[in-house]
Image (cartoon, rainbow, N blue to C red; front, top):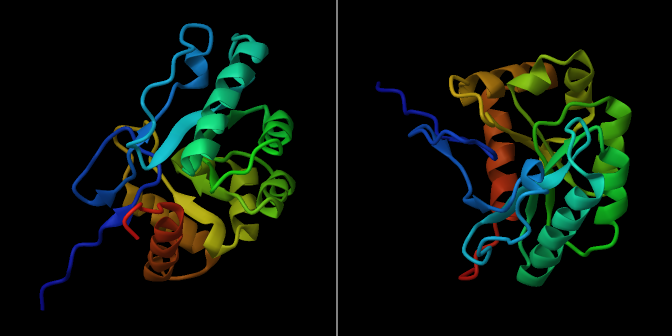
Length: 198
């Protein structure tokens, strides 16, 4: 009997493949906060982003916050989820998010402690994990406390990353089968991406 090829949800990737489903995104990355203040048309994308704050870069925090807030205002107006890039800026990110009523929030490529993960999860936000996350012992511990209904997997910008391997490692950490993880993430994806024609 021929086995069926699995199609994985990859919530954030820069490399489309025939083995994944990935949402369309639009936005201006925080690394460009000092260069660009004009947002692209965000009405047609599935998710706004990636946007957020990156304090590891020598880029004005004020410029990043202005750009971040522009994205969040549009997400609120358009009733769209956001995917966030957060580096050494979790407290400020959560402070800013509290000012908006958003459909859904995904912090992508999460690298942080279980305590930091708990702060995000208490807000009802999603955490997404990729290979960089899996190389971090603290992030692997964060996966153990992340409920299946708040979890995504990704490959981000790693050109050779295999999403199936990300799922395999996350499933191993969660002590579940890959198919159970895939089913949970498929459900999360359906809830995240609300189509106008529903």
